[in-house]
Length: 220
Image (cartoon, rainbow, N blue to C red; front, side, top):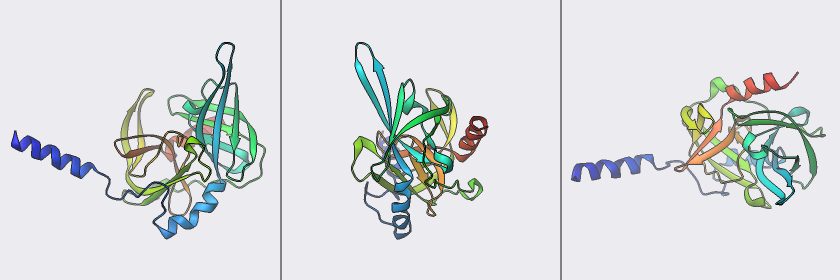
């Protein structure tokens, strides 16, 4: 029994995040220097559903702006919505068009009318365990958006979701409900993933491989 208890304590100690920082508290000067630009490309995504008996229902999440007015977010953020509205960090509001969605990958592609430059996709071959990462989003409608930084623990973590099994990026940066669909970035401010969820002090994000496959199928 004593040996089992020691093993359990050791497991808990080793599984605790070693590099995670306090939520919304920048620590790295390199990542902090990317924050202002990254916020301008991060969106608050609202799915609006109108029902006869329940009235208006809203679902909230985040999104990552790409060039051409395209936006990546999670499918579960906008699933079943009658309309979609996105807000920018500088308080602009847009009606968004749903271009495509993939339930299994949990990705959705939206489009708005803007010429703002979006995130650049990183080179996935350069991802490695131990690299610094940050995520941005708008959980709970925070006025200053949210910011979280940490370390990429595994670029190909095997995960089981209710939509099936997939490989995701696993990090120790903190994400909250409402961060779903937001960007995961490297220290150059390049997009390396789309935040999907969190569990046990770990964040899980959709990989560039899945993003590129989805974009290839979704765009003409």
